[in-house]
Length: 289
Figure: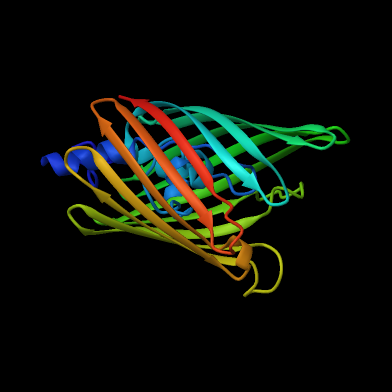
């Protein structure tokens, strides 16, 4: 048996739907805490979950076990406190079929109107992932980001490193260090630990713990939780909750999606819990085979 599918391939229609679901949630986000349709829907609880395109940004070790080619595009609307909202357009490709080394490339363009003109951000991500055994994979993502507005123009280079472990067919764990160089104010070094559990056949839960490399041990810490209910007809329902020691980062989210054959279409909504109604909307389309 191909070890890439030992933990995720099944014979029932419900398990097949799970495979479709896992492969069909793309991205659309921002450099400091890059999200995606699936990331928004789960409030960022993705570091210990097998993924495809979104793994470039959450944990590059997580897409090697997916064993698929994938092309996706997405768009997101992000409100900004005290300013005009931002729009983000993204695209990425993944090859996790190649046995000796899996790879992916992602690009996003963020644009926002400000008083002095327009503020833009262009980011390029190149990721590689390698399965070392039937239970562990390692991965890395290199990133190059251009920031530009009317008074400032700068560039940043950084990278992430992650590991993904299949503890049992129903439990996976991910460990990741992000923005390890941390040479730009918008790229904060952080370390994450996440896990995903299959509670019953159609119900999955994920939990992530994230610590930014600043402040004391108990400062800048956040807990991210998510649930996914997967129907055998291709319908997926999700919810998420993110809690932090910074009240402005407390969020809740919901998502809905549908996938059949080689196509998936998904929507996510995320809102702040501080009464400011910072409502994010994300929509994405993926083709995989």
